Amino acid sequence: MEISMEKNQSLMNSRNTHQGERDVIGAKKFGGEIGHKRRALSVINQNLDNCGGGVKRTGGRVHPCVASKRALSQKVAAEIANKKQCIQEEIKKINESNEGFGVWEDGDGDENEPVPMFLETSDTMVDDHDMEEVEMEDIFEEPVIDIDACDEGNQLAVVEYVEDLYANYRKMENFSLVSPSYMTQQCDLNEKMRGILIDWLIEVHHKFDLQPETLFLTVNLIDRFLAKQSVIRKNLQLVGLVAMLLACKYEEVSVPIIDDLIFISDKAYSRSQILAMEKLMVNTLEFNLSLPTPYVFVKRFLKAAQSESKLDHMSFFLIELCLVEYEMLKFPPSLLAAASVYTAQCSVYGVRQWSKTCEWHARYSEDQLLECSRMIVGYHQKAAIGRLTGVYRKYNTLKFGYASKCEPAKFLVEETDVFFQNNNS
Image 1 (cartoon, rainbow, N blue to C red):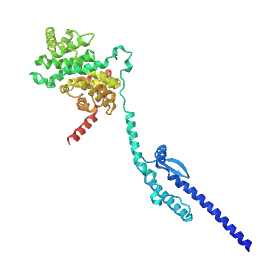
Image 2 (tube, helix red, strand yellow; image 1 turned 180 degrees about the vertical axis):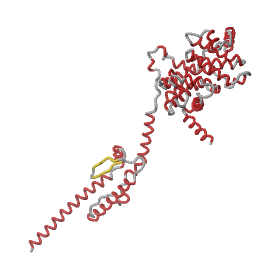
Image 3 (cartoon, rainbow, N blue to C red; image 1 turned 30 degrees about the vertical axis):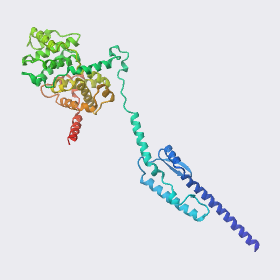
Image 4 (cartoon, rainbow, N blue to C red; image 1 turned 90 degrees about the vertical axis):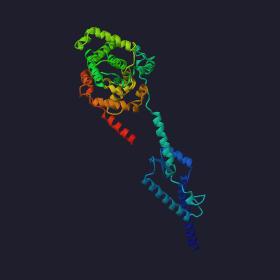
């Protein structure tokens, strides 16, 4: 009996020892996991940054998981809550079975329970993400392209002082402006007569195959002369012919002779009348013929837009439509050129387009061009109707890529209407 009792007692002690070892091992394992969760917040945040948002811990290992940019999804929040409840139940069981072994060393579990890491750092993570977005926008801001770099070997491009040339053009363009109401000083003329004259001169210019600069200078000379000199109706065509003659002498290599001008006017004027008007015009303008026109600016802005032939034709089509319209005299040549290029880009590409390079060279923002551009779209819409269709027929040819057939950028007018309505309201 004594031997049996001793064996039973030894067996019980052995079982208790093994049970205690398993409890201690389980407690250590569980305590190691909980202790791992109670690491310093700085370490937790560092791991959060390294894995891109949040971490999920299983068996002491760290696995990356996807964290929401703004807040936790309901699914993740539910998983955290369930895991927290399971941890509390396990802690309670261990404390009941091992009263001498404490997992928490400092106070009650409610006060020292680890706060879910996502909830603690979500605001900070959102702020960091927003800051990164702002920094990326600054880094990838559209650059201003050096449009003259490709012409460094071209002596005719005068890269060394081309910017000085255009700076001088901007100063001088103020002297080429005329009052947008000068026609009120003419007793026998009106705006429609001016439009008919210029529309006819555009056809003459096209038939003679003259340089584009000649046409723009011709219109400039007509307006500047009429702003200072009163002219009777029957001499208005004579003014146009003489203005073209002077422009040809300034821009062309081969100048039309006076007999050609008499012929195209159906012999309405004599040689002496043409020479007399030429003398009157140069004296009235004080021989100031070399002034910047929209042409010099539109060429520069097209280069800034990195244009191809389709955009070139479209831009000149629109700006020649503006030459016929008297009300466009209120805009300086540089703004008229910039608005024509901007409107042409919108028509060709179907979207609003005005790059930082175009804005830098034109010195006009997109908002500053909207008023003029809106008017240009209106002229484009009615270019094929009415009496003044010379520009439309000129650009409805293969030579100019049938530019006049391109659809107008109607969305510019619609968006501008909405903009003004919102401002007025």
